[in-house]
Each structure stands twice: as C-alpha cells, then as structure tokens.
Amino acid sequence: MKKTAALLALFLALPFARALEIQGVVVPPTAQVSGQNLALNGAGLRTFSLLLVPIKIYVAAFYTPAPLRSEAAVLASPGPMQFSFTFLRAVGASDVAKAWSSQFANSVTYTYPGYAKDRDAFVGMFGSLQQGGVQMVQFVGTDTLVYDQGTLKGTIAGRDFQKAFLSLWFGSDPVASDLKSSLLGN
Image 1 (cartoon, rainbow, N blue to C red):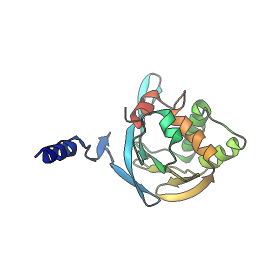
Image 2: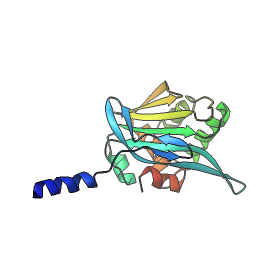
Image 3: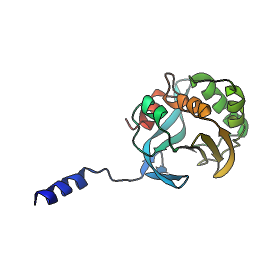
C-alpha cells in the first residue's frame, strides 16, 4: 500500500509535457535533435520598443536534454540544444541581417579569434521571412547547424561559436532580460 501511494505521489508530481501558446504560436513541448528528444526548457516573446511602443517580433523557444535554469548550467551543458524563432511579422532579408547583426553587436559577451568571420557567416545564412516563418539553431556536438524555413543553410564548427551564441541570450547583457528569464524557464 505504501509503495502504491509513493508511486502515485511521484506520478502526480511529474510535469506533464504540453504545448504552450504564445501570441498564437504553438510551442511544442519537445523537439528532436540528432536523434535525441529534447524538452522545452523555456519560451518567451521578443519585443522591441520603437518610440516607447513595444513591437512584438518573434516567439523564441529553447530545448535541452535536461532542465537548465542558469547561465552557468547552459554553458556547462554538452547539448544537444535547439533554439527556434517564430516570427510574428514578415521581415525582409536586409532587416533580418540588420537585426541579427545588432543583436550580436549589443549582446555578445564571449568572443574569440575568428569570431567576426563566424558571426558574419551565421548572419548571411538567413533570408526574408513571412509571418510565421521559423529560424532554428541547433547545437550538435561542437557544430552549430543553422536552419531557415526548415532548410539547413549551413554549419559553423567549434564550441567557441556556440559560447558566443549562448552569450547573446544568457550573458550579462542579453538580447532581452525578460526573454533570458523565460528561456531559462524562470
């Protein structure tokens, strides 16, 4: 009887995987990367203020093999990991490039020799987006795989670029503090 009660209590305490909905975007509870199921670590809305008016840009989701609730835990994780960005508005290719370049310029806290070349290659992999368009970044081993609209656009080798990319979201000057907290599941 005690075993049954203990198992029932454990079962009820387990989080149930369920999709989230943010601004009409359904965020799946899991993602598959390199044959491994990853769980949604956190998701949130990216806004940008223009003349004090918040503009909703995209819904970001972060998938990991185990819960990661701090910058240190994210940096220590060997992965795999996945970020997905579902855009709430259409964005032209030049604006996509400007946005990524600006985010890198304002938020990256980890750089290394060859960083500028890798950053520029990354930014150059994306094209224009329609409303609901998805960009995705996966970490598999030390490779960063870049997808635009479901198509693999390229790979950037090396853990250094992964650390730079992670510093965009989880470093001391993240793209958006509220988004950092949401991606960490806090």
